[in-house]
Image 1 (cartoon, rainbow, N blue to C red):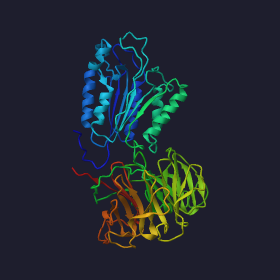
Image 2 (tube, helix red, strand yellow):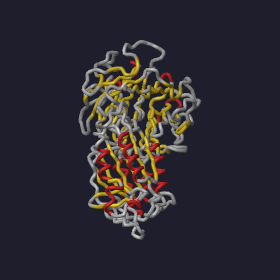
Image 3 (cartoon, rainbow, N blue to C red):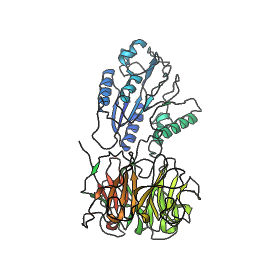
Image 4 (cartoon, rainbow, N blue to C red):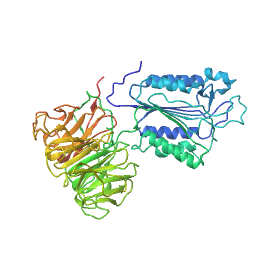
Length: 550
């Protein structure tokens, strides 16, 4: 039976096996550096990585058994093998380095790893997704071994898995490189793997296309996809993408004793201070990007450091020059991970700023009373406008956009907003909006002409059926809605279909205490399920650790 994880968030686990020093078969030159670089990349994506090299058959069996026993339900599993392989009777076999024990093709089933069987064993542990990559179709026609290479045979992905070979079925490739470090396939995989706004399908399709182009179609990767979700991400840390950055358990709780992770030294211009911050964005490396509103800048606070932030955009006083911002209220990272997208509120514009070492921005959209931003996993940008009381969606390069919610004047009808603020877009392109002046959160499904109330909507107040100037919002994988209930100085969770919320952070009795939030604005989860809140009027960002029940 699969082991059930006690954690309230999805874990990610990887096994990398790199065999290069064979007894009879040719040694492989770039497999070790390929595997080492992939190991580092997956660790940056917060995978628990097991990396082994040059294994005998007995060692491969042990490592695989240990890995299988470590897999828990709903985990994302990543397996990569580079080394020699062989096929026989419609089965693929991953070869150990003691290949001299395989005297003929019939010995494969006794002294190598059956790839299909191994994949079946992994999926039998009930993970949420399995990525199964084989870089093992190397040419060895000139070797003296009885295991001549004819490439791999076709392999059908098991349910909830994706299988990829580095070249086509029945084909082989040379052990070659273009960068003197990595094989051609790994060179391109490493180039795109960090793009956390791309699904794994998008990444691998792009890798396959680049490999084909670079080799003039002499190397065409094989792909078999049976993932349950059409949108599977290796890293779910984007607060405003179409998925919550962590799978939050329905009974998850957060420790009320919080930690200051940015600011907390009063309002001021120093880099250890913030001044009325609005929103946060948690980067892939767990660093925080903060829209430091009244300092007219975007700052980055390194994960684990509470001492000082780093200026990444603006910071040249309020103004409308391209090196200035004026009361920025939101920041996200674009789909390619190369630029910041900033809501430059008092300049009434959206700007694009280089993520690293940028000195000035590029205006993307002008003459818009923008408040907050979101981006779906197709790369469409969503912007709330509290003058037109609407949300618009923009494709890349589009400056006009399409109205997707509101836009029927200020009001409290279901087709209206009263100062829309924060936006969350789910995987079905449904749009959640904190309707600040109406003290409610609205959900607009794609192409809808009006929204539905999913939280609040019972006038302003302190009751659990009410909100009081709601701000930041997040929707988790169960449909539960988390709301920064601004004037109530609390964060509440509304489960799907409920008529009232429950307090997860703050005081359900609305008592004035110095240790409570003072107007929470932006909220976010990190990959582990820890909850972050912008404590605006205390000029700081707080982290509330998730409590994991055993």
